[in-house]
Image (tube, rainbow, N blue to C red):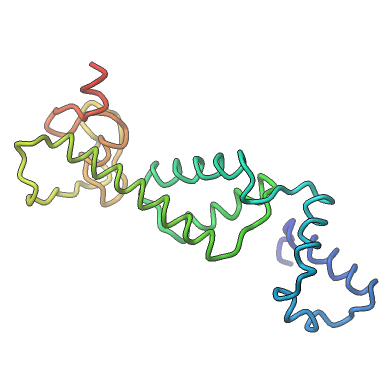
Length: 181
């Protein structure tokens, strides 16, 4: 028997309440998303189960910070980050936004984290390094010299050092540790 989740129990309660209100066939709700009553139902769900609105502050900001940290911690596929964000919203009891809203937020946060990695790498490389030279990827077993960090698969030790604030393989300190010294 498949494992039942929290959502399964809520769906069962919902179907029971539909049956109690005289709706035996859930198919009649096909156009529900276009009905104005759904906004009242959203408010009732929020009040009854203690959920908060996705756009409400400080919850939205705190969730975005959490999402950014996940994207910054390593190279995570968008689908994995999306599922993690979905689980995190449920755990924080925040009403789920529309699918496209969450997809755009994940994409925006990943792009920002990627730009930060690139800018840290550029600063770590210094002005005397040609910008056209590709960075060679190291294996996942190599660790960045002096930082104790293990690169993510496909990530160079320089990129790993930039994320962790350590030093590059050649021993050059990245910008975050150079300014702290």
